[in-house]
Length: 559
Image (tube, rainbow, N blue to C red; front, side, top):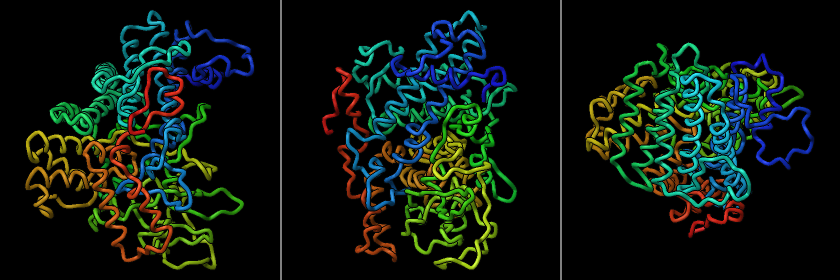
């Protein structure tokens, strides 16, 4: 990930220096002091700075935990399964203004923004060619636009900071309007789309920002602007245009194999840190950061992974799973959909070393397989017996590390995939044309065909009959294709469908033959349904600490 890593021995020290905002946090005086005013004057140094910025997005308070797992459930996709506590309060709609995930995410994203603003202000442009300067600015502006688009999706109106923090007074910034925020986000991402390298360029570094990633995030931003809370559907045309820029470019595409294992192989790449930039347009990297001495790791495939309880004196991919798959997913998948057996395989590995089929959809161990760290060596050994077999059944460790951690993983997280581009195009075209266009149907079918399914017009012609039916199909298809990637809650909010889908979840859970109202665990699965308040939970409150120290930021009225 770092071009000149072999030339520098002091990467970690400098990254830590860059990521420290207050001098009084340094308890030991460094032997070498770098003056930030003249630091960014060489390729080696800008790459060190860039590593520090990227690492901010991979930390636990960003996409290492909060934005990939802890805050992203409590939908028709899945729910927090510990009925005796409320550790994932945001996913239970029990959070307060002092919630650690809310405040941690706010701090982490603004820390990234501050580092970006410092980079922009302090880079020595005379040390680089105009072309290289534009590329560097494009990369950090992509990341700033990405950070602000995430903040706006979570909190709506937030302070707009375009200069780095100098002292405490710099913190006193009022919340900007959504129009002001989106104007800056779009300007940053459009600049990035103009000057970033293409993922096909010879010198492109996998895992870094690229031209089509900027178009993809722009499309997502415009789709958000078209939905709640702005409800300006005319922006669907902008989203479609950016999707079309990627599609017509012709380089990106779906991972497709003759044996219909393309979807499986795509996610094996994430699990094993293999970059395939053709479908994975932009992703958050973890293992690569650890290899350069920057301590980042994620919860992807652990807290929201495939249940694995076996331990002995060796190292095993123990998954302390806190998220259970919603039985809604079992309803929306067609029986022959290859994605079903990968995403929700309904299997577990017990403490006794037994690979089992999970007996019901309402078991806490009915967990997600998308970012699985293991699978049985022989699927025919799966059974539904409870208890310990005579021998430990063999399994395959999919995460390619020598010593897998019990608590964290190095599994990369997709941010924008080509499949998402196709689905956003189809959704936007449906809105613009008051019904699905031929292109929208073709793009939907590309995703279905990769999953081993027939064209939609052949099996579900009613779903392409009109605008409303096609939207319902897109809503379900995004769940089938993009589940557990941190997108579902944001989709449901922009569609104005979160409350309705929670009601549907309630019906499906209570209607399951295994449901028992006397079981605390089963009632616990419905806490998000019972706690959800549409007047409060379509965006997050401002962190208590922030409104305390920012004299110009008032808490939202309903908090």
